[in-house]
Length: 234
Image (cartoon, rainbow, N blue to C red; front, side, top):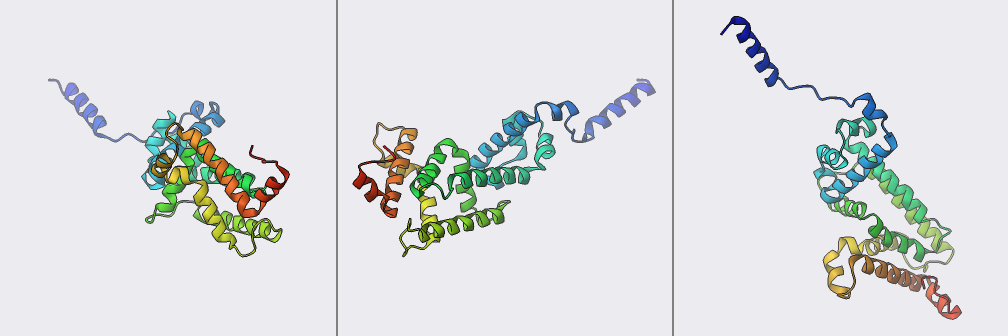
């Protein structure tokens, strides 16, 4: 074997054993429909977080689910923490719209119960984050601030007479959150108590309607609808 051939083998072997630098996304990847790419990444992240929790989800799995180069996650969101923070921000915005004080409380609670049907991945992620005792999710402080604002909103509803005066708004919020998410947090109980001929979707819709009626009893709205003969959920 010639010296030149030996040199070529050594060079190729050395290159094969050298770890190549991580490739940054190409300009065309960054510029190709960025909003659609962001949406795909967020949808994939929500699914992974919902299945595995924040701590268990991997950036590589999120990228594979979205069908993109994982470097795009850093480019658009700065990593896994940024992804979670963006999803949490979207949840707070949607929740703020759902909890508008111009809407009756039963409508608010029904909307949250239905959100587990429309957005089950986020509902599962909320379960993961609340059961986790080893790591605080990114954005926990903002979430706590949001929830305290919701307690304040219930207190204002109480001042207007929508809630009984002897109830603690914080405890009411906790109870309503638990009730609204029951079909996600208690799937085995839900499956056991519902009629056998009802699907998951059918029971969730039925449960949301029943929960709305329960809240109307709590707020006194049930008696008003009984007196007028009008049921807003009918």
